[in-house]
Image 1 (tube, rainbow, N blue to C red):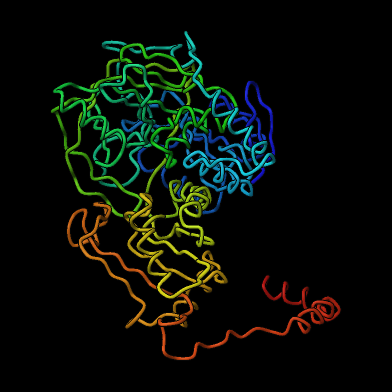
Image 2 (image 1 turned 45 degrees about the vertical axis):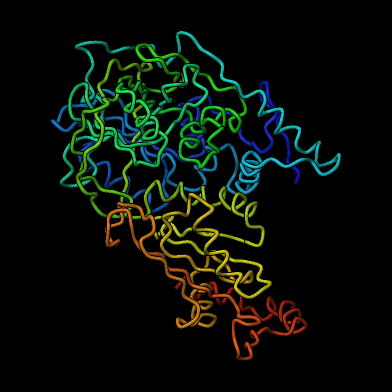
Length: 520
């Protein structure tokens, strides 16, 4: 594997083709210059109105939207503009990583190498790894004092979460919701911050200085909270809103547990991460974020959260989650509030999921080399269905791959439907996949079912909360002991005929005729 190297500042980053975006504003400027961000000066309500405009724009693969005149739930004008649809296309998400969409696989290969580095195979391979090694070693955070995000501070009676233009996205939701918070936590035995976790967990506002922290049990923030709770202590937490795109996207990546999101963000951005100590809690936060909320999460106090519209296209059930007490809010001058909505795909998380799919494939192939490609259809809420193509060489291989994907890869633990096809099938083409299922699988032989296995507890189709079934379909050609029948031969045109028609095609005028027919 070889990478092109681009030097930025103190490190050499192996994949980046765009300049580093130090903060959200520089990324917004880049998007606006490319015609991928528009400003909306008309007053628009944070209650449902922004969601509907965002939803229609996203479905049309439209630009990021900056609402300059948000209207608060009580009808008053908001104090800061609201940015939505930042990552509403795969192009903008790739740009957030510093690459064009075509360069996502190379970024995925770098991530795979970080997870499982292998010794170089010869001098040329060693030299190709040098930019990555040099970048990884120098990605130590840089401490910034008097950072931009602390230009303004709300203390004491000034603290008021209801002044933030948090949206109420769907009818029936109980309160404003912070939807793009980067929640920063650490375990109690990590005084120097080596085990910092940055996750995106939605937060329901329940008062001027209180919010509900909704995190699933397997996430890093919940794990840290469990450790603090076991000691009978409340947990320090910081919430950054509107960081640079690399930091935002790193928070949703399946990174190795030994690699912090801040360090990886610095690696892909091309410069050392700029972090600053919080004012009231012992944590470090992005110096150039727009807003930071500091506080403590109670060891015992919980509150009912929801119902809110979720990425499944349904409202989630009401459940109790820990309560955060805010100790201060800091921000830049004239801050921008970053927001989004979740709902039935397409939504912003599903578009980000398409990009993460591309980054994920090299990780999968590193563990299971016979996999050719993998696709998690965004229409299936990203991870609930997966289609993998394999280089099939022996009987039973498709079943082995199914069980390996379900058990070895945390990202597919909750995948309910898994379809395995041959290398010649395009996993991203539903017509191709449907043909393979219809002609290469038989229900009496090719179905693999599991029961009472871990399932996303938000999945209302499962018979029990958090437990459900899985179905695997072997849609590969059958070889050896897999069948007693002679397997059919695939229809394929003679190569010489294809070549002759390629030469004749333009002279026949069919290209123009067919394109006009499609237009009609």
